[in-house]
Length: 157
Figure 1 (cartoon, one colour):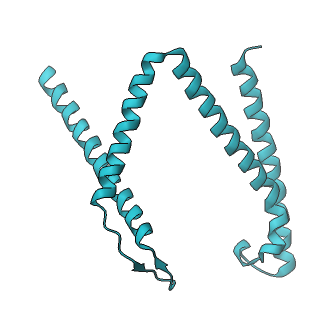
Figure 2 (cartoon, rainbow, N blue to C red):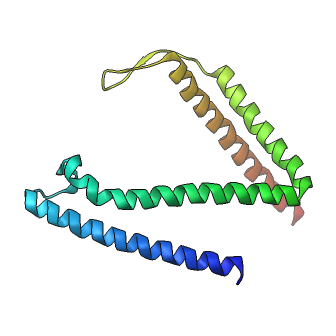
C-alpha cells in the first residue's frame, strides 16, 4: 500500500475523531450552559468547561506536533536527496537572518507602559520593533519583486 493512501486514511480517521469530539464537546457545553443558566459559553467558569474542551484540545496538540515532525522530516529528507537545494536553502536562511539583524539594529528599545498597567521592557520593545522592521523590509521586497515581474512581462510581450 502506498504511503499516500495510508496518509489519506489517517487524515480521514483524525477528521472523524475530531468531528466526534467536537460534537461531544458542543452538546456537553450546551447542556452545561442550560444547567448554569448562561447564554454564552464564555460565561462558564474554567473549572466547569475544561473537562469538555480538554479532549479536543489534546487532539489539536497531537495533530500540531505530528504536523511539525512530518514537516521537518520531509524538509530534511528532500534536502538530503537534493544537495544542490541545500545551497539555495542556506542562502534564504542567511538572507532572512540578515534582514532580522538589520531590523534589530534599526529598532529602538524603550520601556513602554501598557493599557493593563504592566510595562513592556526595553528588550521586548526592541524585539517588537525588530519584527516590524523585518515585516516592512520583506513586504517592500515582495512588492518590488511583483512590480519587477510585471515590468518584465510587459517588456516581453
